[in-house]
Length: 315
Image (cartoon, rainbow, N blue to C red; front, side, top):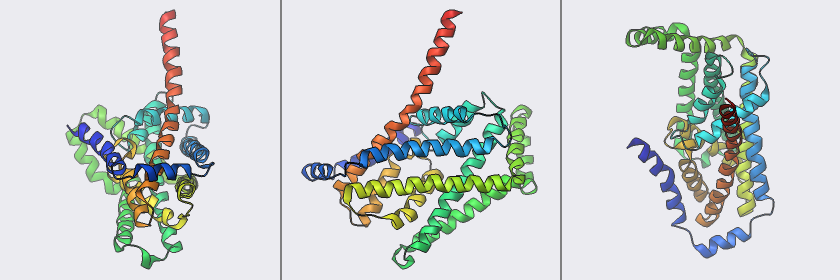
């Protein structure tokens, strides 16, 4: 039942968008797209996938110095492929951790995944704050600053829980009474892997800087794609609103990869800025190309399946 609701939430926004468009106007907007828009969407999507893999590799190499970037890249691509059908926006992180735990210690895989997520959220929040300073704050809805403050408090709480043993001790003692020792040992190992990053401040800062770079590529990519469709540039607005949309998708993991929810929120944002529903429907259609690029993760899955089949056939 819950899974069915998630897929309804994923599909419903597309119906909401495309049932409102004028077909003739949409076709006209399609013919007015700048020639470079589609290649740019493909290039920016591949760049984001690579930079995300690189950031995770940087965190893992602290404790696994011989880990190859290609292995992390492969795990990241495969996780993105699986996450297209798993009903949660957190699915890619979880699947990626499971896949790489086949090659390295599971506690390092899961511990680095948690640090990866926290530093990524800090990056999105930092971009929003930068946008506030670049943009006229009087022109923003009053709830935006409240949402940013709430996100800041939430991330502060997560950071304290991640790196403070004394504060989390009562919670650990409560969990120890309710679960088996085998599960608890795995949780403790992951917890220790997370705590180990407390002494790696420069690496954490480096990870946050890379996160902001990745997210800046995503924000600018959205603004440039919109420019290719509408010939209007909304850099400041994207710097403020896109990070907030991504934060909301993480806080409320309602659909696989945030599909549908992300598109609906972006359409609402740009309609407020004066773009037509037809222009936004073209943007959403271009977004399908970005999702298709993520299906490249199916290539490592296919290769691995073929290799396993050949091995079994030989045996």
